[in-house]
Image (cartoon, rainbow, N blue to C red; front, side, top):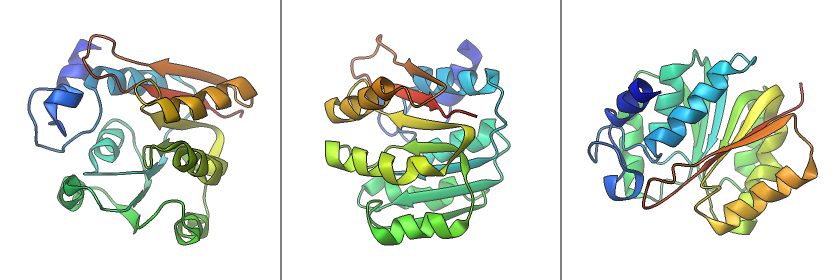
Length: 201
């Protein structure tokens, strides 16, 4: 685990004050290294082959880069509204990755139809877009249906954001999943937290 964390730290952070890491820059990863390392290890230890990836809220593309680095992903689909400054780094960060993207509001019919028209399910659907309760709820409702059997719905900021936490706890209480785990690095000043929900196979 230590070696994996150090490798992720070497990629660069969106801001060491918020996400820790060794430096600000590189791929501008908006993840706490220990949390995403624990998530990756959990997925590696699972019984699901990770070959397709849908991400809602991509920012600089750092998280997509990391998942493509550690898994043999063949299909990568991204949705982002490009309102954050770091978005300008996405194309260069993902220059060696074959991906398609929709630029706009993830809650719009156009975004939903963009994903629907691709015509596949995804082994990972990662939600990290609008962090309001209504926004998170909408993204989970719209895109969780695209999780493949035995695949994963992953939610970022389940520990550090109250609205995201509410939605995550609602899913946990529903029992409509095979398993649910949470990774949070409580040694950090700012805690994000990653929730991993495995769909029934």
